[in-house]
Image (cartoon, rainbow over the protein chains, first blue to last red):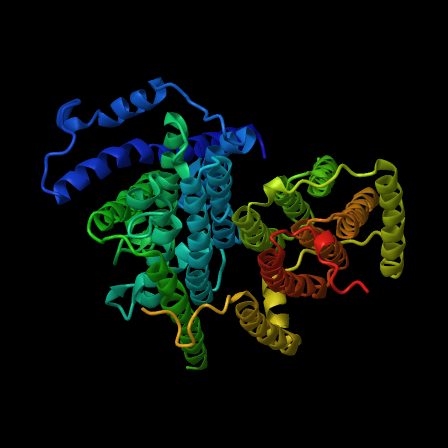
Length: 354
Length: 169
Length: 104
């Protein structure tokens, strides 16, 4: 690895990471205006044109507030909590593929921070660590509501990790690889010449399971039992001050973005445009780097669609009760996930025999 | 570089593992356990087994230690402090146990030469093929074992207050 | 790729120390949950040894054994914690000193 490689890798990582952080302010305004749209009210439209500067105002408000550390908390773990949530959420981004590759001085560089050969395992493994921040933060707050919120978060996330893992299992079976990049590469072309060869058409049940479990993993409505404001004040972050709460908030949005990126890579063809092969596009555009930009735009657009779906679902479907949530996971999603694995295996066997 | 990383991860792992023993509160024990498993995952990576490192994080830190922390917090055991240990007794025990482990390791690895060239293999494919061919029966027995364990856990932890027909839906 | 002998020694040092720490905790600590954690430490020491040997001698059997060990460990922890919960229900504590009914 020479100096050019090093510089390009560092710049690439920085650009991807900073780009992903921008999800947070963007989603702040999208969520608030989206909520207003669905509830038929104007929403925040005072700050700047169409209220576009509202996130800046929100952040300034959070930064300016006094930081209060309650006296009854376990200080070390209380302060560690928010960063323990944000850290895994940021780490997971490394495995997401944003495009094929770009070339500098005729040397290809992947549009991905790290092409890990067990990428999907990496995402699931690091993603499952976010729970510790919630658990330790909720417990250290020394507040019954926080503790109940943390307990709920734990049982919910542990339960929904199983359908998530099962869906990922059948995807791995289907693509024959653990690497997210390989998965996207396999999805090029069309199925029977009509529909795009995307995971969502090959693995519809798997996608459904993954989609539902992704909502539960990110603690979003209809599965936001850990922070139900009607019963638990604010759940696990009841005792937290302004910017600590802001950190939890950031982590939630970044988790949503990662989950969207994962769904795009696994089920929605990643950087592929439907019905158009990469080689054809390259011929039209003439340059590898322009194609790379187009691919990034494709991936980001697909991810943005998922983020809007997140907001849409949040204001459409009412919250589950806790026993309903558990029943959904253990009695419906897990059997379906196991069935999906068997189905995928049988189809692959028949395909191999034919 | 590799050697330095190895030493760093080794010391980190051992330090975190001693934290499990030495912390007074089970919550901090669990926290040290997480750190120690991370160190181990790093060691697996350095040995070249990415798959096992990820499995280590996914299952041990992502599921097993979560269960520990969950139970500790559910029972609120933090108030149960132990008496401060007798240092001499602990020291002697630590020494003898360490020597015992050393002897055990020497006996176990007697037949393995200490230095071998390693040809990188396509690990995942080899392992999965072997799991479903030569080691199919142990694998199936393991799944049966898991099923038995699930039933056992239900039998152990149910309080008896739930009516036979299950809870009302 | 050649692994130097010093790395092997370091690895064995970690294995021995972790196993010893686990055994020590298993024998000396009074809190049932910490005892269970110590068992995990011992299992992980063995896992490290298995993976190291497997990677050095190029035999996948070690890694397969580790997969089995991890599966059994997960089940063991779930059952162990279930038992600890029951003990807590029985006496309101998980200190092992309080459970000597079978001691003659």
